[in-house]
Amino acid sequence: MQMRTIEIVVGAFMLAGLISLGILATRMSGFNVDSESNTYSLYANFENIGGLVVRSKVSIAGVHVGQVAAITYNKDNYDARVRMEIDASVDNITTDSTASILTEGLLGGKYVGLSMGAEEDYLGGGDEITDTQSAIVLEELIGQFLLNKF
Image 1 (cartoon, rainbow, N blue to C red):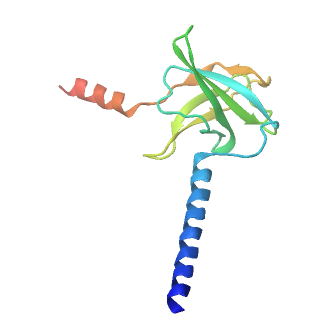
Image 2 (spheres, helix red, strand yellow):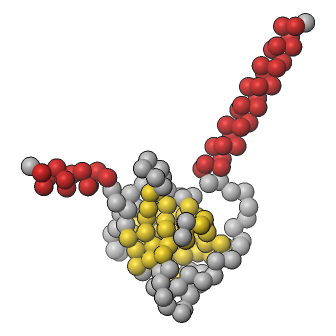
Image 3 (cartoon, rainbow, N blue to C red):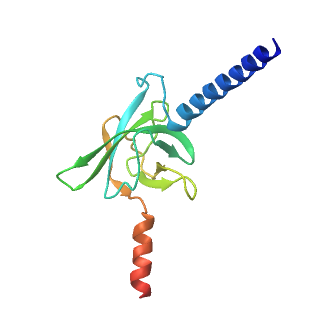
């Protein structure tokens, strides 16, 4: 009887661990079951997205305000077109704002950081952020350093 109790406790512990792992994985991936009806789309073109993925966060001053919804290749300009879904409550993004691809920490993932401008006009749904800064690719920096060194 005691062996059966130990097996049940170990099984319950394993089940709790698997559930916790599943919750952690969904939170880290940025998966959201809420409807997207309370958001609006903004677009930005980047020469190099450097590992940015769909569902990466979009932030202003370090505050999460949206996420990357789609990344497509723009054949006309030979660059990447990024569609961002921004929370509808953030309706004060100015027309001269800057979109930059940044890194979360030394080994973290990429995200889009928005820096506000000084214009009085605001971007609306479907508008494009024209001032962008592409990702800094570590391999390119190392290559430039080595070519200049030798």
